[in-house]
Amino acid sequence: MSLHLFEAFGVELEYMIVDRQTLAVRPIADLLLSAVSPSGGPEPEVALGPISWSNELAAHVVELKTTEPSPCLSGLADRFQEHVRRIDALLEPMGARLLPSAMHPLMDPAAEARLWPHGFGPVYQAFDRIFDCRGHGWSNLQSMHLNLPFSGDEEFALLHAAIRLVLPILPALAASSPIVEGRPTGLMDNRLEFYRHNCRRVPQVTGRVIPEPAFSQAEYDRRILEPMYDAIAPLDPEGILRFEWLNARGAIARFDRSTIEIRLLDVQECPRADLAIATLVAAAVRALAEERWSSTVAQRSIPVDVLEPILLGCVAEADRALVADRDYLRCFALADAGPMTAIDLWRGLFAALRDDLGPPEDRQPLALILDRGPLARRVVERLGADATPTPEAIRSVYGELCDCLVEDRPFS
Image 1 (cartoon, rainbow, N blue to C red):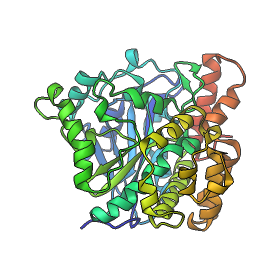
Image 2 (cartoon, rainbow, N blue to C red; image 1 turned 90 degrees about the vertical axis):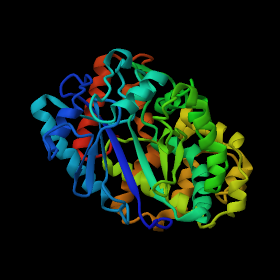
Image 3 (tube, rainbow, N blue to C red; image 1 turned 135 degrees about the vertical axis):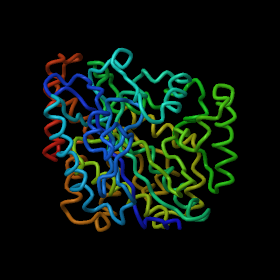
Image 4 (cartoon, rainbow, N blue to C red; image 1 turned 120 degrees about the vertical axis):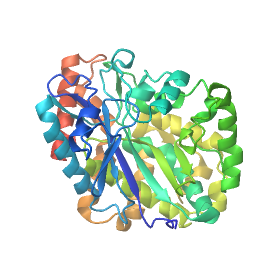
């Protein structure tokens, strides 16, 4: 039986395995998973109580996720943290550790990427053959996925309308990828910039990242899934990729399990920060779905042409991006405030939703983000004004991020 709106939540956090001293990429996820697998072999997913460990595509990435949907987000940070520390203890004898944030700042994926060689081989081989997965948008990215359930078309319509509006401003909270191959690019969320283009051979797979306005399963099939399947069919005649998970928009409907998966959140420096962001995002989506600030009719009327420029602004400038569209702001009951930065928008939402965000310790990381900006902003500030920081300086900062992950503390 399907869960109803906001009855439960699914969370996935991705981390990269790197050398404990040099932070070089270490493609040993199979060794890590073998260490906890009942079979003693490299299974792609191992359930370890409420949290499961898994791998998808890149051999240097491990994913932690809720084994079953959780009835609330409060308390999940502690559970994820227990598993982060367990992984750290297993990796230490291998001379490795976990690297947080959304991109490795020094990785050259063309030279260093290795695909997972075990289960799901045909699927990964098909992706690699069609899209070439030796690129940043495939093998150098770590994200948090937030899964929200629905039951039936009416709930799907409410949830999809609300999520579409929140997607463009997510990088203002969560951007954590300002450096590519040792250089600050000027963008705060390079992961999403690469994500936008990694399926350009078949552009229907990603679309414009913001999903089209589709508010029933039949309409979603007609407007999103079927055009995508038709476009990729000449390159995938066996139909290996003809599944809902091929869809790479910033939020994807999974009708096979009645959830919508939000994909635009960069992973943070520690689970406590990730779950604080997830709590605020879920609360904002819920307020929209419950029509506290605007009707679902008004929310559905906002086209991709309005939402996409807001997203692109937040990919570039994150917290400092300007949000000016009055129809969009009106959906959050903020039109009278006039144009505002994306972080000011989130400050307004945080103030309106404070009572919905659980105990004070759950939302504590949000105070740092709303005051100092997302992790990407803080990393750039730490590295200083140099146009090209040295590899040593970058390793020093990202080594501290690794410490933040194990110690479950914010980077400031």
